[in-house]
Image (cartoon, rainbow, N blue to C red; front, side, top):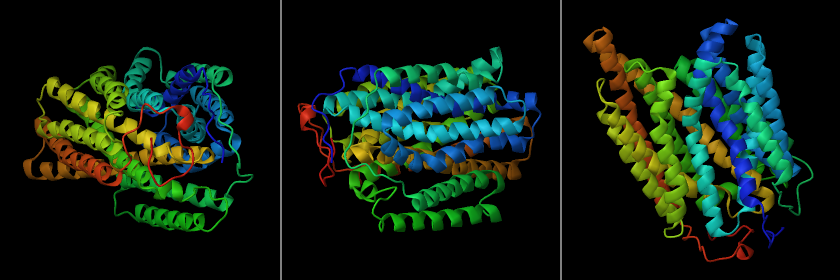
Length: 493
């Protein structure tokens, strides 16, 4: 097993900037496209069903291929895979920006998902392997976490501006200059970490089972949102996902060169990080979704104004990750820091339970700030734990599990909480009649019911962090030369 180099990359902070800028592109893309979709639908003349597929095509490709993308990064070399991912994402974005019909747009969105699934885990692995000193590692993951959590907010704002003042095609084309900047950085300052014992071949059966299983799972939650949980297609997809993923895990324990070595999942600190992130993202996606609905449907905000209304959330997340998480990581063990962060976020979400149709923006802003501070603080050590402590040749697949947790959590949260909110709204209307005022109150009633569930998910994230994560406080006085790179039952810096 290769050791981490005694002399870290002297341009590692510049490398982090380029990696983070490139990764921002992936986080921006979904939010921007959500805002631009109505304009794209009108310009290309496709149905509401086609509009849903523009979102689904990206989600299926991205979520289904994350594990394979993480392992490909380990096999090809992270720097090479990172560059390929950027080039591919830019090419798919150019195709989407030039699309003349729905078919071309769907191919472009799927292409973005494919190359995003390669790019996202590789970027996280590069940061994990580049920063081995505990203090620098905390700062690096603080910056990365701030970009990861604030990207969706910036995407909403940028999507509104591009759509309103240019046209929907710029929601795709804006990725090209970002990718070019990332490619320049990858070539000039990003260094890969050479590893011994790289696997010469990929686990093809495992790749097929994992990809099909994750596609079925993500697609199942997408269909549950639109068709209902009891539809035949939804149930079939969930059953297929369970069977395929169980078969995948069984085969991974029996072969010599698995796609996903099971020790990546079974170490308690990494497992705790993956689970807590999944439940945390379930809650955050719900908060994001229902606040967007509330601001536009109930308060009548424009897309640009809606994006601007989320700025306190993005700023608080960035501060929580870059400042609070980074500074507290040297004073508290990761499980306590994560648990505390999730509990603070839970308080912010709980404030939204008091939301009324005529509530002022001040209540939302306070809830956004509290939630953002907590989730930014919690996600910083969680992302670090999810990738640390594995051998360098497994860094990509461990990073992919962080992304998979986020993608699955987002799919579950969107489908489940949307169903809860819709059911609650329907039940409210059934007993109180109709009319604009009643409909607004009914919508808000549905949102606040879902917020109770989102609050519960954050409590569960906190509990998992406090119970499962037993890693000690990182020793910020340790040098990078002493950083462990082999798998150990002890814990993670």
